[in-house]
Image (cartoon, helix red, strand yellow):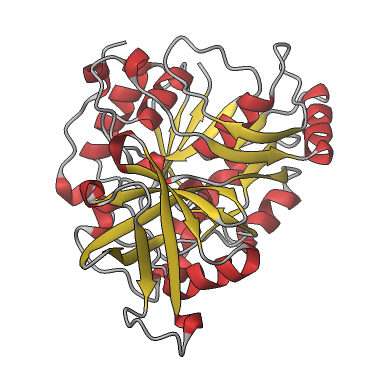
Length: 358
């Protein structure tokens, strides 16, 4: 499909730079296939679903994955920014480098303390460039490994707010809480599963009382989620792989809920993509552990997910393509126009939508 079919104009004032408080006071646009739009708030979610439905949430935890370093090559040096996006081993990450043209295979990048002194090795982290690919993608091998590397990244890294926020204001201490879900557990994401940012302990309590269960999966969101689609046709776009897991216990619980007539409600496109990657042709969800690079565009036949809760997405993005596949392209174009005209807040810190499958 032509990528320009997924374009739309978004006024700058609709882009949220901070979340609303409390989290569940955000607005939510309800989009059903056979009726008009409903303007509600996230706190209404228990009333918008049915007893027996089951929520699936992504419990990945965002790490401070933006690193600033100094490329060291013989007698020359250059400053570079590294955005980690996928772990490939105890001491290895794939990353996006900027400016990538300053890096060659074999170069060494020093993060943290720039002094050549070895008196305080723990304040410094080195990496070697193992490979260069397209779009600034590089493979890095770090001088630390496992938990020691995790600790160094946590100490030296910066929380990777999306560019449409980071370009307007600096990251601050409040973002360390705001840009994590209340149920974040497994470290490894470089972007938040933003639909989950709306949930509170009180909302979970009310969902439980309504008979709406919830289960967790893990998909470590990569920085590829920020990348624009530069191709003119969707067939020419390459998705970056992300690692995820659906446990045997969760798969069994979801299959049993569906067998009883409950609907699977994916909280966020990351949960949906993982469930669809794990689903068999008959809709049964199997245990899953590994990479997924699933790219969902209109024409895709959904197997596992019945309802999707998600934020509002970028024009020409793979995520707007996904919601258009789920609820219909014209329906979503109309829904987004309604959202813009009625003041919904867009993107990571913005409002939500609740989409019922076409």
